[in-house]
Length: 168
Image 1: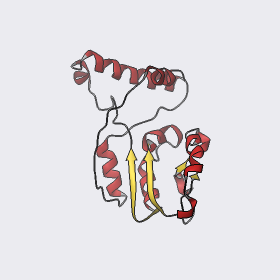
Image 2: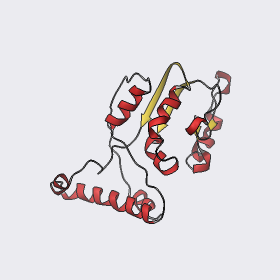
Image 3: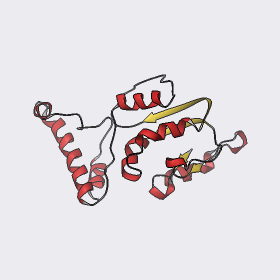
Image 4: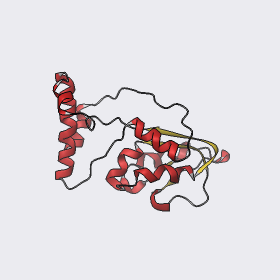
């Protein structure tokens, strides 16, 4: 398990330390993996990229195309890499497509745009999600064999989550 505790994202992962089975080699590795900062000589059987690619624009912008290669170098033979992320809500939506959306979908798109505008106006960088086609292409370029290219699950956006994102 890895996490970057300095970003605040790894705090929950640190709490999971007690659940690891150290007798079989489980370990919690914290820190930034970008630009060669990965643990020296480490080889992992499983790596979970939980919203990693999208969050990188906020913490290590313009490195999204390199991280999968760096992770590949840290994979043991036969390792599995699981990538979890969001499909961009509005990035590929033209004005004609937007106009044809049902009212409820327009609210979701408008809220995402407002969230990103608030984050930019607060002098922060919004997360930048990438479509599955981009992720799959980068995985293949990095030498990964894509076994299950796409599974889609619904996301529930609670009022508190949206409010927290707007209150930057």
